[in-house]
Amino acid sequence: MAKKLQVKQLKSSIKRPQNQKRTLEALGLKKIGQVVEHEATPNILGMIDKVKHLVSTQEA
Image (tube, rainbow, N blue to C red):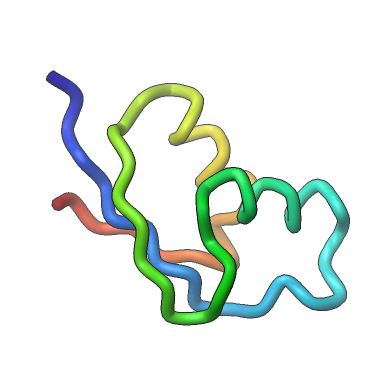
């Protein structure tokens, strides 16, 4: 079983490229301070890497 990650949005997606906005949306993040939980799959880790300057992660 893959480990779980908590992803929290720290910064706004305003004035960011469209691909970063879509990545946040695909992760399920809509608001600053929102926390979602995902399994640490290669797809999710790649998405987090694309927006690492907007989010923080923790193991759940």
